[in-house]
Amino acid sequence: MESELPGGVGYRTHAEPRCLLGDEPSWRIMAAGVKIRRFLFPRLTRGFFVRAAVVAAFAYLFFGHVCIPLRIKGSSMEPTYRDGRFNFCWRLRYILSEPKRHDVAVIRFAGKRVMLLKRVIAVEGEKVEFRHGKLFVDGKEIDEPYVRYPCNWDLPPRQVEKGHVYVMGDNRNTSMRYHGFGQTSIKRIVGAPLW
Image (cartoon, rainbow, N blue to C red; front, top):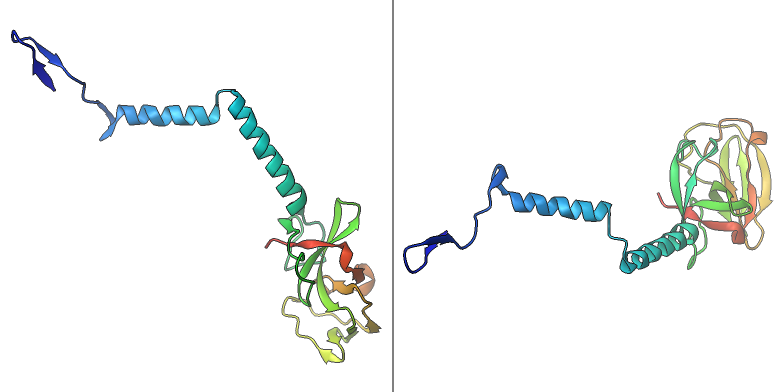
């Protein structure tokens, strides 16, 4: 845009931005480049270090104590949870409630690093047994749609103790002696898988 000074001399009050890509003005492209550069290579100021420390502390607390990452090893929960898959243990799941039948629970096995992923099939006070591969709780057959492979297990009736649950994997197509199952204290249940 041109204006005239007294005496007929013209000057530009501002320059129109030139377009480099289609209708996008070049200053917008340059601004986007500056934002990306600042995001990838921020200035190392005190504010940056404070933000980085807050994010690191939050990540440590969240992923170390609330939502623990875990990698599934073994086939005891197939096909529900497959070997080698990744998931999170949501530790807040049983803060206000107790595990119920059919819940999948993460159980502390040894220390803080070794955990088992098992399904709750009976809760305290119930009597659990297997007859020809079918689960019976208090004498009633329980439907288990998550068990895909038939089994021929026989397990005599046993009472679940107070403060305990009876847990077992979903993959039951081999002999019982190759499976880890039984009663576990509710205190050993860390949480539940996030999905």
